[in-house]
Image (cartoon, rainbow, N blue to C red; front, side):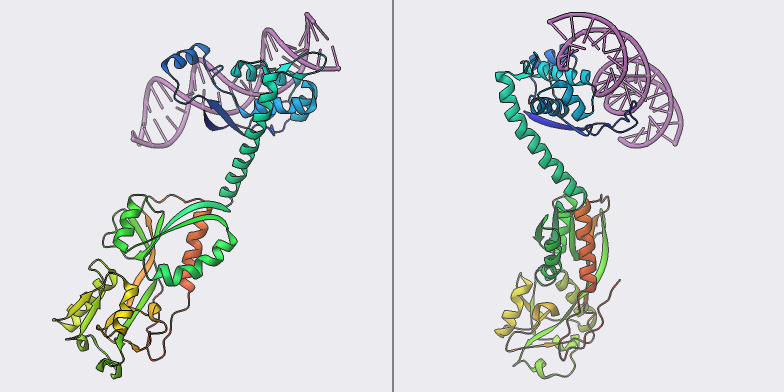
Length: 361
DNA sequence: ATGCCCCTACTCCCGTAGGG
DNA sequence: CCCTACGGGAGTAGGGGCAT
């Protein structure tokens, strides 16, 4: 069986000048993928007998409840002939007699079974209606979010916690990845939006910058840079740099700056995850340029130092598809929450680090 | 390919008349 | 008293034609 929902028009009651309270969604029920034989029958019947709608079921249930066609008509605000027509249609659709008409309306054996099952169907429908209402009001829904590090671990939880408390029925799925991966996922429709840096290509997406993720140099205490008052990119020459992968936007930005201001050569160790860098610095493997938020406070045995000639902000924001269609109320509310949360999160200040002001757009 | 307009067929409901 | 059948009015869906 399949259930097809159609938006039934709501005609103005010509006789009484009011809308029919019963004329909302109709659930039509039919057979899954009709066979050729069934299709012929359907054509022969010209639409009769292959479906039933929710109103006729409600009419039937009302008759059973009140024990009379007339009283059911009054309850449902139909004329009595319409009630008769509904039952005829229902019985015709099902191919069984549901009610015995005599002085008193009685259920047949089939009618009793149908009454029982129809009750469940109506309850399910009421549940569906309620779920749809919640979706419309933004109280429920599913939003697939892609987030890059460190925002995923260090910023998002604080922003999402109050949102989830306010909208407990909204399901959020979070995919963590780098900007390149998140953009691909967005294009392929695997996520609805992403929090990431500016993608290499803007084709097919629109980027809304929100803040700059500041970075600084993390060095072991025993390194000579730890005691240096001012550090510039040229001071990194000859040092062992701990780097993330080549597609990491932080590494790209750092390498571009090093080429421009510091010159070659540099040598480093590649570590795939940003969060692991600080532990390798702690173990005296080398030095690393890391987002400040990930090393607040710095691990024991390390020192965080600003690099004066490094534009420290990696612009981060919301990435959406160019042909973006509204996600529904829940999605829109989440976007709004993320936007406000990321714009308003307090900048991480570290003693001894002369941060530039976070650049807001 | 998309949007708009017009026409036709269909659906839904009503009131009325008649039968059990 | 209750149910059924019938005719008619009003609204909607869908197809066809046309313009962009």
